[in-house]
Image (cartoon, rainbow, N blue to C red):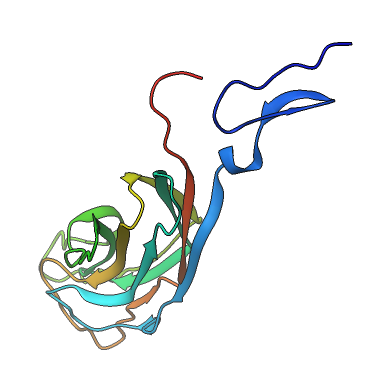
Length: 197
């Protein structure tokens, strides 16, 4: 029996053979669970109102460069709106990598969820009223952050912004609700590798 010698970085060579070292596999470096502080009844909001606003700071304290990506897991969402109003919730994230980073305020939309119900009057005497309920399941977005050198820090920001674009009318029995529930941020890291093994 001959012993196979490991010649590559992040590999193991044992009596059972060769394989990846545990340090090669992606590992969970940081996690943040944020809940919505405004779920429930909503009013008109022409500008974005934060339902969830959170961030993560992580510093590479190892001697090796790391390849990072963020997993953004959003809960199932629900809304209720009445004719003719629009309610939306938009997800936004931003990040910065530096020795002392400061990610810009997350304002550019990544994903969104919303609805509008508009019932037009066919004649001047007919009055149409509608109420709309909508739910979507949870979903995950993976954001590639890239290379983090030793001593560098990543700052990742996430926001869920509620707004009511367009016209708005408050009826006698209007009902407007939004539920963003929660968001879980998970920062994953693996060794940065250039070339082939």
